[in-house]
Image (cartoon, rainbow, N blue to C red; front, side):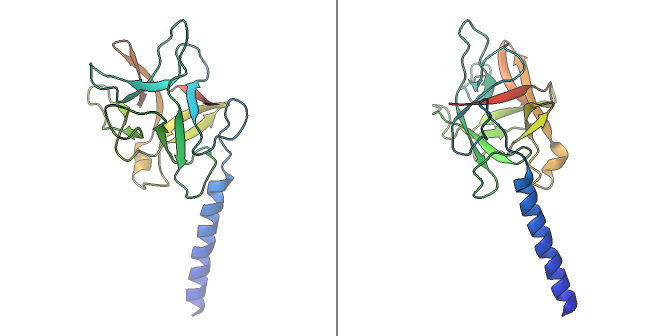
Length: 194
């Protein structure tokens, strides 16, 4: 009986530690220094450069614009399309560093019914993975290094085997179109409330 009580106590303690660890992660801050909140619209913009605009939907090879990409640099730079974040942890209202969440464009698409971001299979030619919209959504996270935020895919809290295939997002250019991809050059971002 004592062994059972000891085992149950250890399990309870472990669950309490895991729950506390998720809330110990610092919040991601927007450009005004406020925590990024779930359900609120934000523009995802370049953080360390002004070479292009915000994230948006782009087309590949004349297809429907169902790829996540970046607005090109023009005389009037576009902020892109707003997104909303939905944290994995039920009831969480703050987007926290290194915590899983779904990203969804807060805009309609004529191509697919959902604008949730999804990771697709690795391209055999480039070894990169594109981010597209549709289906149920993949879990992403935001990491911070040297006071810069990076978008990443590493949903270790939602998928035990996914942690072996993590990657950080960056911008790759294909025929003049800027795509958000994993496993290429990394790119820092900032989050401006819409």
